[in-house]
Amino acid sequence: MEKILMVCLGNICRSPMAEGIVQDAFRRHNIAVEVHSAGTAGYHIGESADPRAQAELRKHQIDISNERAQQFIPEFFQTYDFIFTMDRNNFSDVYYLAETEEERAKVDMLMNVVYPGENIPIPDPYYGGSSGFSQVYSMISEAAEALVQNYKSKKK
Ligand code: 4NP
Image 1: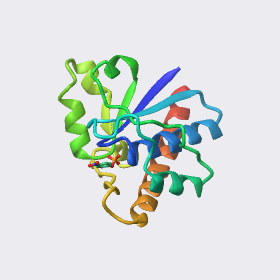
Image 2: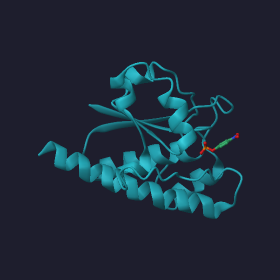
Image 3: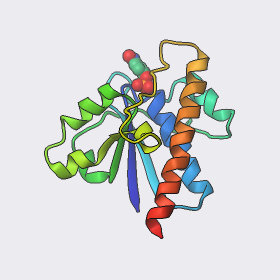
Image 4: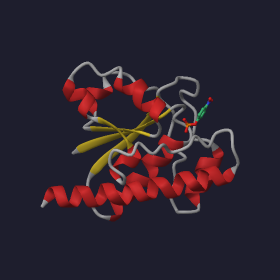
């Protein structure tokens, strides 16, 4: 089974949302893909997703209450087939840990699935209000549908 890793800074806002939303999209389309998430920083290791992230996803019937934050480690280049980062900082932090061309080829910014090469960041909602979390939800949902469609066309 293919494995996808979503990466942000703290692994309590954007990437656990991406894990939940993308997992849900693949499930709805009956596609078996494993999705996990991690943060480039270790500040929140072991913590649940931010209550605002959980609340936003509950509105869309997605439960991420079991997710716990973990930090990205270079071994994940072996574990995962694709590594999607939320913003440019996450991208460079992960990219510079890659040691081979094969590892570097696994890393991209998530919104490039929808808008190839545009490097559109998913803004960090941590210090803002709840509208930031709705924006994160709608951007990631768009990416989730595109991922599912890409996956379906690949399989044909
Ligand atoms: P995330 O948001 O990267 O989307 O999980 C953040 C969460 C925590 C912090 C920064 C961003 N922080 O500085 O603690």
